[in-house]
Length: 106
Image (cartoon, rainbow, N blue to C red; front, side):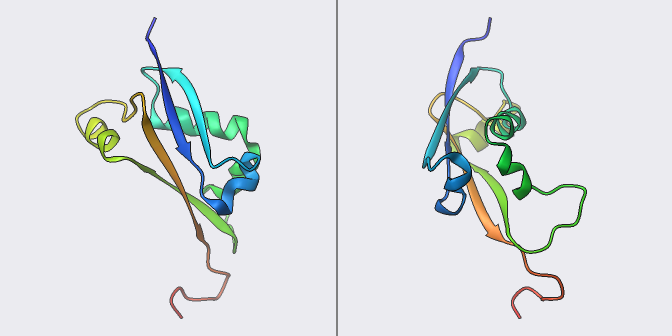
């Protein structure tokens, strides 16, 4: 059995309502867990988050989520690892979607 590791998800202020007000969420997961599996877990635990991820349907306006990893995680991921290790941080960012017909930067 793979040892467990703790991964911290950093939540921006604009998304905290979706995470019951939390600034961070720490997940205990098996050592072979991938970043995609962490995201799937977050979507199961916090289903309202799903509306802020890109999908098949066109979305207009509102916030959307981007995901970043800390530098040690990126180094691990680039060398064929999972990108996750104990103490690793997965950082969520929220950006605004432009409304229909509005050019970004206009």
